[in-house]
Length: 439
Image (cartoon, rainbow, N blue to C red; front, top):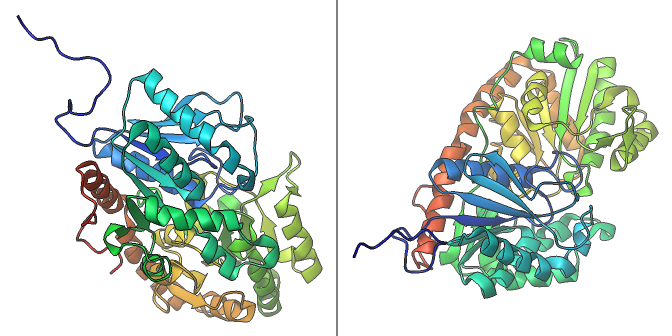
């Protein structure tokens, strides 16, 4: 009697391959959200691009995120073999990420129900940010699969550099301490983060892999500077500085505004500072946090130099980067500094804070300059060196482009997929690839 092929959902012990599908979790923000809007930035790009590039390697990924709009389809497809699945947990509207913890058990249960309805099982879970990490350990009761965790930012690091009014909660700090022990692997964005986890949190060194986020070098590459400036409405004689990011105190835009005051005294009307991020209303006027930036610029007397253009789609960013003489990243903390690497890939030098992952991505004096956190005079001085020296600007831009290719998504995706494979195979040590991306 012939044996028919089994066509039902996967079950443990049936597969010939140990790694067939991965579940990624990004609770508080969707990888499809508009960049530069609230809670939408480098992590959104990371989750989407990592998922798509790993899917290109033949491994399908489902990304679970919380529904914030009742009209959003349950399943969306950003690329082949990647599904973004909207989970209803709490009201389907925008909620502060600080108020989401109460809905995480529902999120985990709804994930499990989706998998049952869809007839799929997952071999590994990859959780992004602390809220997702807690969901990953909750969902273990349903799936009993290993999970990898990436902080992206941590309460400890943010609190070390943030004003008292913007401190992260004690709850977040406690959950992150637990996740260090509960996670089967941890992906650190830079060597400093890995060392801090081992030293401060007593994390097991064997389960930490240092793998930075990547950059899409096919999208981010140099464009014709004059054409980009004409498209944006800039003159070739302008001294152009670009800032790209969420309008959040951690991003250090107050340092940029103070530095702009110094630059304006030196450069006068030829200075243009593009602020990419935040919200504009129907009339093109800044609103929300970006309105606060406009008020601060007015109080400093630099309104004439500041151009607020709001959040922009990712495919628009290479034009903005290529139009700039330099990109400023004055963050108080960055686990990687995606904006810096995107700009570098476009052949543009970067002036960045000596903070977090930025000290590993920006080569001080080679691809740009590093300045002390919150030191607006040092930032202004570094920017003037580049703006006043076209030869230096060109040489740094060329070096920046070469340096950025270390972070191509092909290499990053291979390294992360290796971690998934080791976890799915039952390994809990020697999880990392031998190749060193930071070199």
